[in-house]
Image (tube, rainbow, N blue to C red):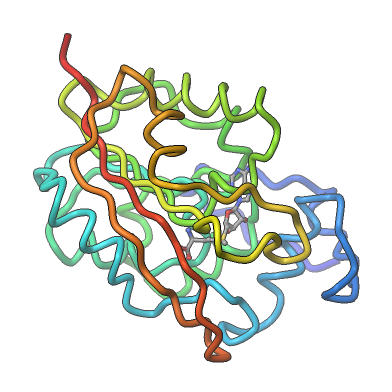
Length: 234
Ligand SMILES: C[S@@+](CC[C@H](N)C(=O)[O-])C[C@H]1O[C@@H](n2cnc3c(N)ncnc32)[C@H](O)[C@@H]1O
């Protein structure tokens, strides 16, 4: 097995189990999320339906929430997204990217080169691994919908309310009700804007919602619902 050279600037914990990649045919339901994601990132960008080289809706969410460049920002399930690099280029100085997949984070780091040192990388399940501090902007593109179990969804909502500072914003997107019911072979829970508002609960007020049609690299449209919500100050 090839081992990565230790890079002390990475807060990246490797889970050996995640390195065991099991190839599973794409239409077969899959059950081990860790190996599913490692497998997904083993292919090229075009193999990943969610790839978006220009993160247009994420940038729209930022334009709505208007976080300050000094605000702590976290991209949960950020994978190999280009968003962190865009934030760095826009002067954001306190960026965390968290993902279950170490391969995804390595892809993102490789793309950024030396600039990757200016980002905090966390490998782990977001329900257990979000650093214990407050963020001014929480970004989740296409991750919440993998939490299909009501208990997990309540934990997500509680975590969000604890980790987004009063006055800070959360930007979340999931497949819309007419979107796919699976992604990467895993079942998803699709959400209307109202579902998202209800999940966020009284701790947040809705700032903006919109629906977008993401074109996969293979040209298939996928409807997503977005919400930007502000953490109440009282
Ligand atoms: C559909 S991809 C979206 C990636 C990224 N947000 C983007 O827009 O390119 C879902 C991502 O969520 C990550 N993921 C799935 N379940 C997770 C969990 N429980 N905790 C952290 N990351 C998770 C996957 O590894 C994958 O990178």
